[in-house]
Length: 281
Length: 319
Image (cartoon, rainbow over all chains, first blue to last red; front, side):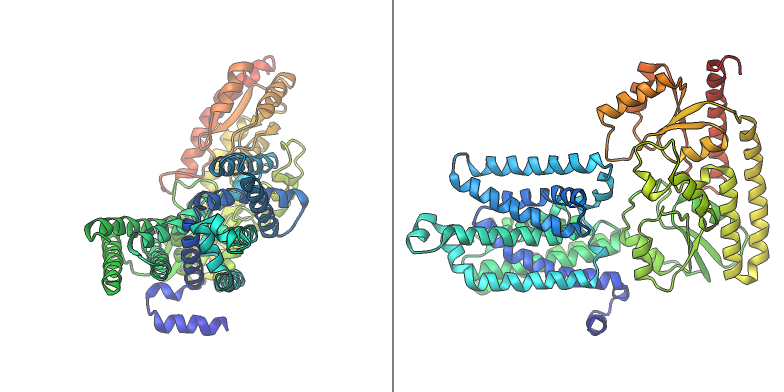
């Protein structure tokens, strides 16, 4: 099946860079990750969870450190497990409303980052994982792409069933609750979904820029869109466009891929901001 | 109205695409090169210098290096798109071996047809013995082994010969030339090795700030009291600095071998508090790309070592 996809890509995209398998792999990965991020980003921006997803990214270090400490061979699992726990605990404390949400997220974010660094530096292994900071989409393998595709389908299903509830909650939480929306459950499910997506793509995208990829397309789309449908359509389109442009740019100019994608998305964001002002959108 | 917004978005994306294309054209103004008959690529600087010397005056062979001349050691090296591209067009990939090229598995996976020439294939025993080096610090590098063979001139010569034989087997037309070049280069290295040997001592300990220097110390007959692992990202813990100071005092160590590539602050602190002198040694992993840079670097190290050994003898009471 893989050969078939490769063949299709070669005939549809007859560029010199397409002859490399690693480019095909990362191209496929980008075709999956970017729409996923575009879609998810809209909800993250709506529910004011930008900081939350950033904190999740930072917890990756602790997840890995715990994994090595407990002797789990596949640190992806410990990373995802820890992120899910992290997200749920954070949600519980956040809902108590004893401290403001951004403070508690910041506390969690710095604690998990520091804990991860302490554990990894104790074993002298930090430098081994420093590649997590910027990520490396070029080394992605077909099996991992398949996993991402699975998560993509999961996200579509989640959006299919929970979009209205999630949206209602982002508009007015108390109102949503009075209408019988299980606010806490939906919130938790969404947080777990973000945790999984962030953790399974962090190796490819990198801790330092994963949030930019989640937020920038959605923010740019928000500048232009006037209804929910447009908002999502634009966000996915911008995300996809930035991903492909960034990959091509990084290939021809020898720059790191992840940050290049972010810059492309940032360019779209600032132009859309300008367009919003000029065209009075 | 909805239509207009789509147009605006398209316009924005178009602008970004055009600017991107412009940037790319600007940075890559016609640098296409003709491909030579045989492309040999080295993984990093020391291997590049070997390859450069071996392929001197050999027609139709191009020696290149995957990493930049200033990359330094390959610890945890992250491959870039450029590296992948370079390797796609490579016939022979010369590596140091011993686990130095941690990315090798990925490389072979994406380039199954690439011929990999392992310069360290005859040095596996050396690697084994350095794995269980009793003097090595906390035991982190025990798992990976110490693959900085080239700092021991003897092993470096083994690497030169290994690469030369590998190239000779692959490119039979020039086999003789490769061997000749190897002889000439080994001779030059041996000349410096002789000089180094004159410094050889029967006792004395040193603390090294890079496991690479363990090989140099071994060649000089020095006992490595401790290998302090430094890398670009992490700093020494306070406990470790104190431990090193204790060791310097208790074992009467007068020299610290540090490396310019990494931070020197820790060594400075230790120097100030204990009176041991730190000497900056070149681990020969960076340079200007000249084919004699190993020889020149070793000469400089020789000068530094002469000074260092002056202190060592003084401490040992007129050795």
